[in-house]
Every structure is written in C-alpha cells, then in structure tokens.
Length: 249
Image (cartoon, rainbow, N blue to C red):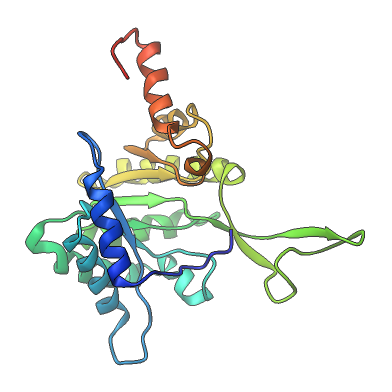
C-alpha cells in the first residue's frame, strides 16, 4: 500500500468513532490508532500525539495505539520506533495524558531485521513508560516493481522506489517478530504487565493460530477484513470445533 497517513476532519472522526463504539459487542474492544505530526505552530511532536490520543479516548477508544512506524511517510517519522529514547518520551507523554481515565496505551512498531538487541531496548523503553502492549508488525518497506513495456520499473514512479508492503507477503516476518518479542518479554522479567500483540499477513482464519502459538497474547488483522469481514469469527468457529465445543454462532 502507499496511503501515507491521511486523516479526516475532527467532526467526521468524532461521528465515526461514536458509530464504531456503538457497534462494539460483548468481549470486543475498540482500539484507535493515532499518530502525531511535527507541526509548525510550536506544538511538539509529543504534545500532538497526546492531543490525538486524548481525542480518541474522549470519543470512545477503549485503548489507544501509537503508530510509530508507518513506512509510507518521511523516513524520520516512519522510523521513530527504532529510537528507544523517542519511544520512551512519546509513550510517557501519552500515558500521562490518558492516566486519569486509565486508558491502555499500545505502541505499534515495524520490523527489526537482525537487530534483536534494538528490539529489546525498544520494548524495555515502552515498558518503563507505562505502555500496556507492544504491537507489530507494521507494513514492511520494500522495493516494489511493475512490468512496463517489457521492462521492470518502480511501481510508484522513479521518486518512490519503495513502499510499505502488507498482507500475505509479510506474515513470516511478523510471526518471527512475535516469537522474538515473546522471548524478550519472557527472559527480561520486567515486562510481565505488557502484552504482545501480533499483526501482519493474517489472511486466512488459521493464520491467527500461527501468531498465538508464536507467543502473541492477541492477534489482529487489517487487510483481510476488506475481503472477509468475518475472518475472526471463522477462526473462533474453527477453534471451537477443534475443541468439541458447540453453540459458537
């Protein structure tokens, strides 16, 4: 994909979040993902994240996810998650903003290819800041090509050689990320209060199991929902059937 992170007006989002909250059923949770912008009016990046998180909470969010890793924006903004100090500072600011309502804060990160030590430092920073869950994998930046007049050329034009790739292709990376995150949490001993959430490449009901068996406390999907809004329900039905349970609608 190459959406970047466009946003609608506050009025539109307030209405949209209200409708989403009204549709929440028993055992479900409305998680709202937010991102901050480096503004030109003197408002810091941390304060902008906090403002967005507060808006989400006020309009129905049961948990707020900080997107620190979108690969389809400028490189600095898309790689915030790779700086442990930035992760701590931004997370701490938002946790403090939401402290009166005790709304859980989640951080969403990208891949840490061959950087297990960095992943551990980032997880520790998030945990120290009071983050309640560590979520990955965001879209993975890759070089994307297409065939044009018999030649292989950049799919998005010469000025955009890379884009964030999501869906089926990144599932092996995402499962490996979760396995490593679960290991780090287990061996660190100081992150017992921080959940691990897996996302990235779940396109079939059985894929949820891959993430849960790798150590995720929860598994999520985005891309697949466009084609199959009932994919999560199908997983629960499969799991119930495998365990000899009945009555799952």
